[in-house]
Amino acid sequence: EKHLDRVPYPLPRVVVQRPSAGYCHPASKRDIIEVLRFFDEEYIYGLHCVVLARASVGPGSGRLIFGRLLVPGTIILYEQPRTPWVLPGSLAEKEVEKLTHAGAAIEQVSRGLQMVVHWPGAALRDFMLFDVLMHEVAHHTLQQYTGKRPARIARTADHEAYADRFASRCRTRYEQYRHFTERQSYQDQEAQH
Image 1 (cartoon, rainbow, N blue to C red):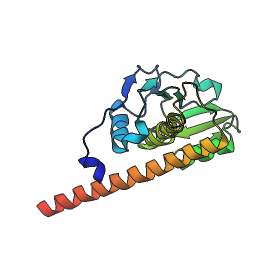
Image 2 (tube, one colour):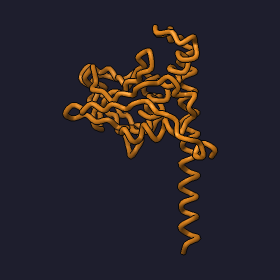
Image 3 (cartoon, one colour):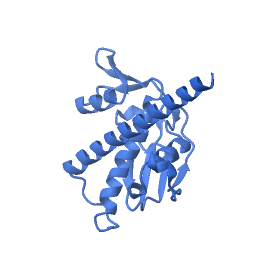
Image 4 (cartoon, rainbow, N blue to C red):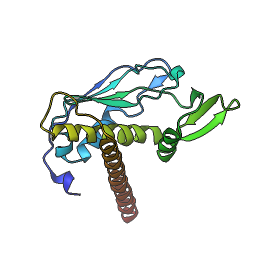
């Protein structure tokens, strides 16, 4: 990959707030730096800071909050409850689809009064890195290259669709690279034996 030969470009500062009791930051500072370094500088140009923050809404509210873009140039990634999540009521079909596509296992329990969300392995970390962080990076690029306005431009359905596609492409590209490097490492080890 050509990106490995480039001179490192400056990354945004990553600020970590201690998570609340029973919560965690699924993606670490190191994970965030690794993903941002992997992608081209043009995507993070003007991005000043990524904050791993405490949630502003608790899980008892039934509202899921993952991250947001603060204009200009700050992305907030919120702490998440430790898995499994027990949520009151049920999630919207679109939310269930988004979470299951990212690897979550979701079940309705207590006669439909609660939903339990399980995140196996690194699924929640990858969800936060791609479906949240890179989704917000997409919004940042739209903002950055639209006249550098200090006020946030309106999020239209087209912008959300663009951000979703961008995040999906980033995830695919990164997973292909990870798979390639793991395979290369295995082949190197086999050649040594």
